[in-house]
Amino acid sequence: METLNQILEFEIFTFGTYTLQVAQVTSILIIIIVTKAILWIIKKAFFRKNKSRKIDTGSTYALLKIIR
Image 1 (cartoon, rainbow, N blue to C red):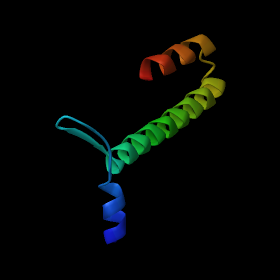
Image 2: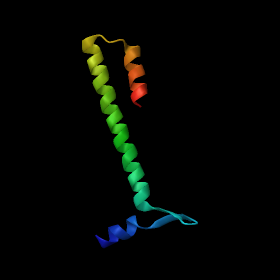
Image 3: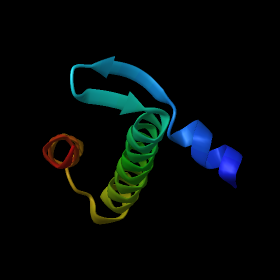
Image 4: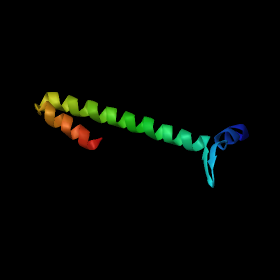
């Protein structure tokens, strides 16, 4: 566990008082991946409902762009 903490606290970049650590980069990547997954699930749900409710494809696409 100590080794993992050392890896996460490793400083990648330092500029004045600002430091970029591995933990921050990891957090950003996790947020991006989770966001992409949620958007993919929403897209699949909208287009599935689009087929059953006969909603215009353009309206569904516009709604997805607004959510994104």
